[in-house]
Length: 43
Length: 301
Image (cartoon, chains in turn brown, red):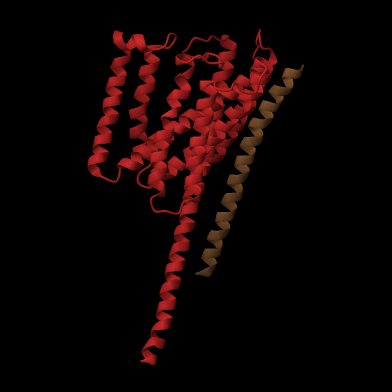
C-alpha cells in the first residue's frame, strides 16, 4: 500500500536526522579534543 | 558518573528498539487511517520532547537574565512562587474553569503551571552560574533537532491522510514552523555573533521564542485547524493499546533526548575550556613578546 511508504519515510527520516546530529556532535568532540591536545603540546 | 552514561545508553537503545517493535507490530492499525497512523509514535513524542526542551531553555534563559542583579533575581523568585500558587488554585475556580477548553482537565492545567516554578528552582540549583547559559544552548539545539523531526514527519503523515503536504494558514502548522524558525535564529545568533552581549541577547530572544510554545500547544483548542485534536487531555480519543505504545515511545525518546543533551552539554563545556585555553595562550604570547621587546627599547635609549 502507498501509505506504508510514507510511514517508512517518516521513520527513516527521524533516525537519519538523529544520526546526522549525533555525527556532528562526535565530529565536534574530536576536533575540540585535538585542539586541546595541540594546546597542551605548545606549553 | 562515568559509568552512568554507557549504562543509560544501553537502556535507551533497548527501549527505542522495543518502542519500534511496539509501534510497528503490537499497536493496532487505525480503523480510518490504516498503517500510516503509526507515524504518531514518532511524531507526537518528538513534539512533546521539543516542547519540554524549549521550556527548559526558557527557564534557563530567565534565570540567566535575572542573575545579574540580586534584586531582580529575588523578584523573579517571588514571581515563580506566585505563578505556582495561582496555578495551583486558579484552574479549579469556576470563572477560570469556564475558560479552560473542553476536554482539558483543571488538574492537568494546575500540574502544568506548577511545573514552571518547580523547574525554575531545580534548574537554578543544578546549573549554577554560567552553566545556565550552557544549559540554554544545549536545550535549544536539541529542541531544534526534535522540532525538525516534527516538521518532517508531519507533512509525511498529512500527504496520505489530508491529500496535501501542508495546510497553508493552519495555525498549528504555521506556529510550529515559526517556533522552529525562532530557535534556528537563536542558534544562528549564538554561532555567528562575537559580541560580549551575545549570551544576553540570545537569552532575551529565547524568552520571546518560548511565548510561541503555548500558542502551538493551545492553537488546536482556540482556532479552527486541520490538525487533529490532542490524544491526551483534549477532545481526541485513543485505543488504550495505542496510548500505551505512545507513552512508552515518548519515554524512550525522552531518555534518548536526555542523553543527547548530556553529550551536547559536555561538548559546550569542552568548547569553552578550549576557548579559555586559547585566550590564555594568546595572553601568554603577548606577555612574552612584550618582555622580549623591553631590553631592545632600553638599549636603544
